[in-house]
Length: 383
Image (cartoon, rainbow, N blue to C red):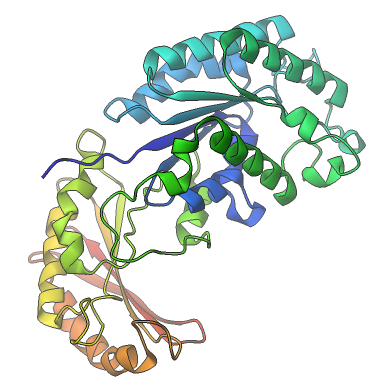
């Protein structure tokens, strides 16, 4: 079977980009991730506090670490200048002349590293003068103009966020005069999606296929625990989401080699979570049903192939037996609740012998939500 590689977007920037993964602030990273789930990985390399000089110094290593064994990103966004535009006596300050030169050098390096990638510049946004934090809106405007000039000279499209965040609503776009509020993040998100749709319509979500076949469509409109984890671990750990809507353990096994291909030339993940079973637990007259004995065998195979002691130190297995709302298509309350109790009973001994020679510690059994959702969370500690 041919290996499949997830396409990606690479977001380069400073703290405004770093914080964009926060779903509680409608971060533009989190919103893009919602739109492109199972189509494009959104790789965030926002470095809080960095100016263009420090980014240029760090960029070769950053690109090597993130893309040494990956295909070029489809799109790279470059969103810098807010720190360069600090007062001249600040260590972060970079003159407009050097700022422009740094942007050109970064673009040249990106073109050399990713010949097929589309490049997109974003100017620094406005500064809310009622909460100045040492910067001025006028100074930010000068750096925005320099960014636009670099884009014109280098034939790279530019999103003029400085202009978009002016006016009577300026204060509402920022949480502290500099960093984006939820409303400001939506402005950036809408500008990005507008630029993609206008300049590269082939990269809009509806024009990009799912990676791996889909048995039915999903609604990725809710930023959930994956986005919250990415927010917590930004600049520490990439959260790689390989949730496949509608899949059972049987179908997941079919594509496991392609799913794991992402890590063929990368350091093994620190942690793997395996969260399957909600579809397997359908009634036996549905195409999704997987008998309990086969489900257990599939989990054993997934754990042994997806996270052995030589590669992954910890694997979490999450087992969901879900009571659905009455009348839900394909799944009904009767389908799931009739199976929930016996599955919980049967899974404990199955888990205890799931991986030979490894100690299993049952951490928690949590009733969750008003509709009955039971998670059996087991931690595999390799000894």
